Length: 321
Ligand code: CP
Image (tube, rainbow, N blue to C red; front, side):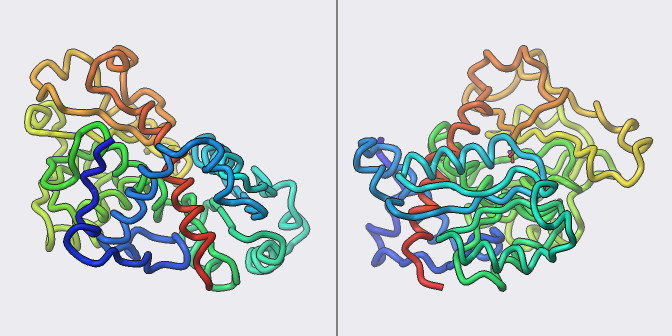
């Protein structure tokens, strides 16, 4: 594949990756993002044998205090493909947190057992706290409604691979923009790529004001409740699930749960090249008749989790904290 991401290499001296942990997309410069995507494209084209040496003799802790399919299992697949070993847990209920151990103590202990820590937690800010108390790099696989930076990097990788470029795109975020951490992270990342952003949500699930205001200083932003009207303008539609588990009141969830359901007929005036993405899991928000259209790339998007997480593990296994 022609990477077309080699601008850092061609125009400047290639920058070193500036981070020791992957906690928030706010910590990433444009160069850091390109560095990760470029490494992911390189690793994807490596032989299995060469790849299997990259994490040789390394142990990675996979600590999921909240449910996950894609993030946990693509990280664990990536670790094994790179020749590393995985320890960890898929739910907090089997750990000594049940006996009252603090989160900080758990992290300190795990950083003595492993070379890298991957985690997900239902509370915002826990990944930052983990990075502060751990003497090993921490990768945030999602902290409550706050951030999901590794998802963002795989989203950008998917856009680059299937749309062909990252700069100057028109991207529509649809659904739960209040609680959707993948949206918060991707919208911030796209400010490095001069995206025009469309926030399409019900009034009570709008993009948090502090995020929207900051993005508006760097990019053109439209906020609306209408989806169909804007479909012909967009290069990417990023659908999201309404995050039932984060609603304080289930009645409020019932009112908005099916507010946007994208179906094939709604795509009749879309650009031919327009792509539909979704971080998954999907509930009702994309009809299955979209799956076989050339617009749908959400399953390819979930597959991008492997090369991107391989790249992050490889890069962070070489940094010194
Ligand atoms: N996209 C994503 O984070 O999926 P999981 O919740 O299954 O990890």
